[in-house]
Image (cartoon, rainbow, N blue to C red):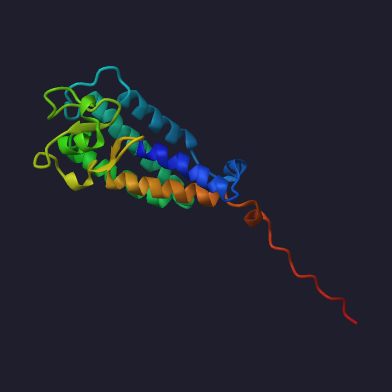
Length: 199
C-alpha cells in the first residue's frame, strides 16, 4: 500500500513541478515484463479470498518470494535508471526479512492495532495472515529480524503498516518519477551562444 501511495504522490508532485507523463515513454527500461509478472504474483497472493493461518514456505509464501526475486532481477538489469538502486535496496531488505520468516512479512499485534488493521487478522491473531497484505502476525520475540518488518504506521485515511525496505522503495519511486518526468525546460538542449562574425 505504501508503495502505491508513494507512486501516486511522486507522479502528482512531479507533474506539479512541470513534469510530463509522456516523458516516461522515453525511459529505457529493460525487460519490463518481469516487473509486471512480479507485481501480478503479489496481487494473486495478497488478494486471495480467505487467507487464514500462515504456513512457512507454503505455496503462497513461495509465490511472494518469487515475485520479489523477479523484481530484483528487473532492478539489476535497469541499475542505471534513476531511483532504481534505492528501490533495489528496499526490495532486498524486504526479501531478507521475509526469507527469515518463512516467506511472509512479520508485523506485531501492537503495530496492527496502531494502524487500525487488527480486524484484518483472524483469531487467534498470532501466526495469522493479514488480509490484503503480505504480512504474518508475530510477536517481536518470535519474529526474525523484526526491525526490518512492518513496524511503521501510516494513519487515516490510508491506514497501513510498512517496513524500512518500503521506505527505500518509496524514496526510489520519488526519485524515478521526478527525474524521468523532468520539467519541459530541462529537456531542451541548452542553446549554444552565437558566435560573432569575424571582422
